Image 1 (cartoon, rainbow, N blue to C red):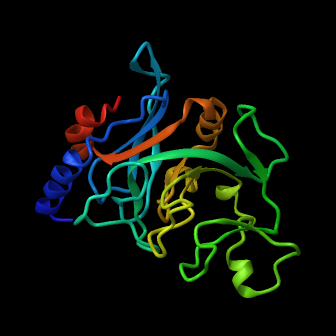
Image 2: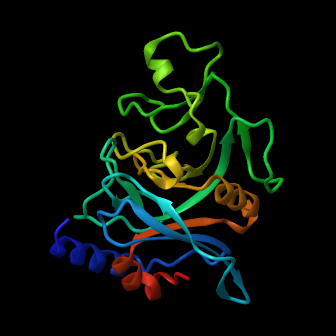
Length: 241
């Protein structure tokens, strides 16, 4: 992405609709990447107390998409002329996103009672086929997968990295745009952080379990992921931590 496009994006987003973090949200995870092309980020968790954001615990490392970041489709204003996340681009979606809904291989996990959790079975699909009416949606089959298409969409692939995941609401229902990116989650990183993701935010399993245990759906948790320069420009206008 050129420096001109980055500046244009920041200017457009800053002025769009006077956006700021929703007042009812009091839990936020902030991810900061060095640049748009970085596949690494630093995560920090914040809670709002007496109207101000307070960091809880120390920051920790994460991996992003192999090719870095691109603007995603969340609750933030969508820049009209910016480079946007697309299916298969190996970029993590940048912006502000609702988070919630955990999935895993375990029968149960430590979590808030109101945080939805589903134990993944072979019949659980997450559709990444942009031509399907079920694109970027969870689908449960009535019988075990039989076709190649069904097997390709399976959430359970015998892969430890995907044995626990937390949904990031990029391009999420009910306003799903075909081809704009699907199946964006927090999940366990590979090779101890030695490998980037295809577009998800990945981290150490212990940190992921701690994060999931902290989230209270009643506090409307959010994920903010931005390159450092964009975060610094938008911090005041969006009332970021």
